[in-house]
Image (cartoon, rainbow over all chains, first blue to last red; front, side):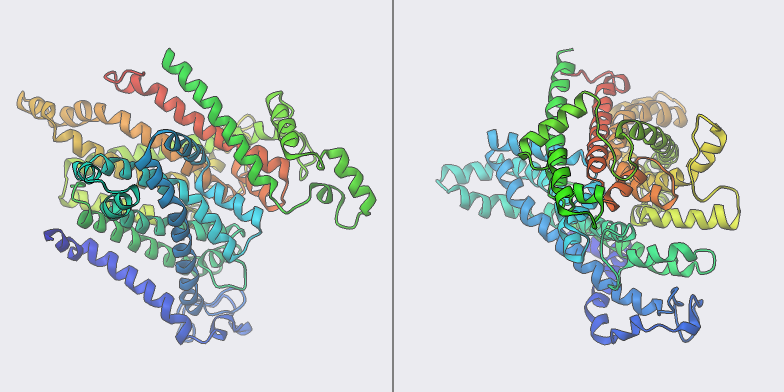
Amino acid sequence: MKNLKKLFNPKGLIGSTLVILVVLIAIFAPLIIPPEYATRMDMRARLSPPDFSHWLGTDQLGRDLFYRMMLGARTSINIATSAVLMSLIIGLPLGLMSGYFGGRVDNVLMRLVDTLLSFPALLLALTISAVLGPSMQNTIIAIGIAFTPYLARLIRGEALRVSQMPYVEAAISSGATHLRLIIGHVLPNIMPVIIVQSTISLAFAILAEAGLSFLGLGTQPPEASWGLMIQASRDYLDRAPWTALVPGTAVALTVLGLNMFGDVLRDVLDPRSD
Amino acid sequence: MAYIIHRLFSMAITLFLISIITFTVTNILPGDVAMMIMGTQSNPEALANLRENLGLNDPLVYQYSKWIIGMLTGDWGNSLLFKMPIGPILLQKMTASGLIVLLSMIIALALAVPLGVWSAVYKNKWQDTVSSSASIVGVSLPDFFWGIMLILLFARALGWLPSSGFVDPGEDFLLALKHAFLPSLALGLGLMAHLTRMTRATMTGILSQEFIRVARAKGLAERVVVWQYGLANAVGPVMTVAGLQMGYLFGSIIVMESLFNYTGMGWLTYQALLNRDIPLIQATVFVIAAVVMLINLIVDLLYPFFDPRIKLK
């Protein structure tokens, strides 16, 4: 594993540090910070710039932006992880079957997937969220469904490639069952691609959640969400640009970390991509 | 020719599937169209009558065929929100968004191609690090964040450009461009990041090939080798990726047009979704998916012009 060293190049270090930091905040912030800190309204300090009492300033209701940003991390990470997990749960079996068995199943499934890919992911997610009624749970479903065709397509291609490898043929000739082949030979060999793609999908899911909430069709108030914070800041840009900068930077750093980490993971796990 | 016919045939099937998906998704909407027209205070009998008249009690398959036949014959129904026929609204909004899509694509390509090539030429040197870092940061920033930053900089601080609104290019082209510029720039910057990464990867592959070494060996200027010999081979793949990014672009215009109050297709879709204007949702979603698919088809068909080695079959 000489590739493992790449995890410790500057890009890998920055990426993994950012990801670990955000995950730690998502886990521990709600345990440490009393929830009323993020909802307490300080009417005398509305839209106040960053100072000692409010490190990152306050929003239009005088709520502390630092605490809201910290608590928003859990919302983002929760939604993104659940959505990506959901698209994996649907997309993985579909992609595996399509790629491994080929033939008519593959034709029908991939025609459907290609059609779904004509719908912009954000449009699909917005429509589903509007259909189901916006809420945190429905945001997860909307993003999860919107991402499924991308994962299914990728996994299908990989499964197709791997199932033509000599070691799979060898296993077939030694009489292995389909189930054993898929779980024992195909799946482990496409795992690196799945891990890398999931990391990058997480980054996109965080962006999608922010976009949905920004449009009012994602997470709903009073939940602390970065997208909602940016939406609220729109009317106060002139007087209080920090209300947009704080949540915007939080989204950007999280997504940046995931993207960098994903890039480095690809170098480490996928020897073909040199 | 046979290829084109084959593609058109498969396009028809895809359009059919797109229409089915659109119809299915929108028909599980919990909103009741009759209730939306008459308001929540209306009397139940009148509601039931209207439902009957609108055909809402008919079987879904029948409703679907009525809808699709209407779409095919140019009768796109009426928007509940705007109380107007959908066809003309869509046409006007499509032109408005066309301007933004085109402008942002031009901005993205004009920035991404030179940056990507530069990155590939100086692979693993500081120039590459700068350009690669810039593009990974670009990919990571949400589009609406770009939008807000641009509003703060160009509209509020500098006062050069309007921060919201739409002007019909037919009336005052320059003013229309001014209104379209900031949303396009915000979209273009996000798009640029993706395209730069792609251009870099493609060019890196091309520059390590034999014919480039031959071109250098016979003493051609490096400029000619890279920009003529190298780039000519990258045009095809870059165009394909640009085409694939159309889906992303049409998703992003929903956010961007709402942010800039630019009344195009994305703004219309958002209004339709917010107000549960079901006929309008069906029409906008269907049209956007169809346009994305068509653009990709056109890119595929144009491929042989960018790369004469490729024969369509």
